[in-house]
Image 1: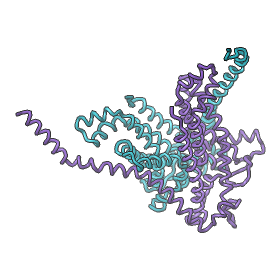
Image 2 (image 1 turned 180 degrees about the vertical axis):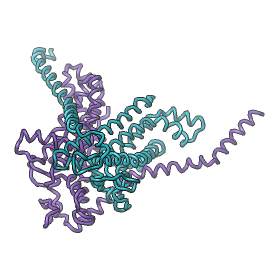
Image 3 (image 1 turned 135 degrees about the vertical axis):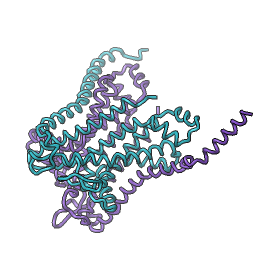
Image 4 (image 1 turned 45 degrees about the vertical axis):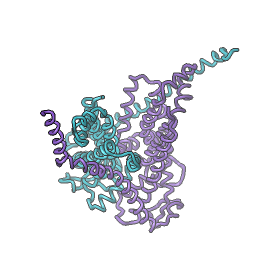
Length: 311
Length: 292
């Protein structure tokens, strides 16, 4: 009799609970949370539509063909010319120099940490790389302008005060930790058994690394490099502080340049009013920049997903 | 039959070993490069800036005379920025992470959100500035206020917080949830009383690191139009203000030599702030994070 009563009361309890308001809340929680998740999608939509609409406004005043084919970017001149190529070339110069610094050093660091270093060394080096990755870019910009440029000028006297070389090198330093740590992840994830197999056949550690581990991790490494270069393309403060503001269509790295990002900064800190052609031009340049980085990010994702080898 | 010609192997062995040693040395040199750069960078900034770092530097507003220039408005401004970014980004990031980890079904919408988040993390920060300028400054007419800058920065660091919170929530073992359900708790009760308390150290660590990124970021605020020269403090979130990186940018781009030293002093303040925030993050990680 007492047992039956107990069962009844439990059933009653469940019934009672279901009617409580807090159980009703349970059903609304997922929708509320999905709203917060929607914010990230709205952000993307906001970025895309902002860039598209303002770029369209820009192209009402400047023809598309001028934007892509004109060889001068002189928005502030009396006879303004809006050819984006000099800005793109400035960005590519920085990215190339950065890649020349960051790819070998970052990759070598990754190899040393994953294949040669003792646990103790790794515990010292990895936090240092994390600190380097966390230094604000304005600090790197200051470093480029007040240290790297003067040092380079004492070696190459013909170097201008503002040039592509110094910020390029410093952007390279900035993205080195990114290549190092992402590539190291890729190297570490290559299974031990593959290394041991090669060692058992009489390979030296270097041969194991270069002929077995690197090829096995190549997709992760390439993805890390693409991601880091995309970061270099979007880098703003270093090139604004040390790169100058002279967009030019040549391959000279010793003279003043202007990147896409630096142009946006120049207009933002200048006194071009809202609604002028110059105001809308930063959106067209921003759109170009966005497309560059978007393609590279998608490429990196594609590489690391499709080319990944499963062990 | 001899499969291996031992004489050839023996002849090649020394060069292979030498190559191994040389390359190992080169790899090590490359690794120390980062250390070297960090050393030079810190030494240069310290040597240049320490002379200007006195009590007056924290007491004064920006000035046209380098010896009178101070960082008060920028330092207080950076704290104002954090006050806006921290709650907004944490709420949105945590909500998204809980949704993705606990509620979202495996369908195209969920994978679209995930793809979207990883792509947002790769968008250059200056593009977020253009978004903030159009939506918050112009469309919502927030002007160049703390709120407009804070919302822009919140969107910028949102992907970082989402990913950190997702990892923290994922690392809470299934058994804890099952035990909670077994006791008759509902899903939401389980999340609030079991999963989140277990995940909170990881979430906090990730969020503080994201916040320190927002404190050091310059480019979006330049585009939003935050002024670089200001001699008053904001009274509420609708006032205009300036932040440490903007002030440093302003000093760096001045032609006078003395302002370079003032900029270095400003960088020291910024670095101290970031080191302080990072130590809190590391402290929380080491002290409270459980391994299951």
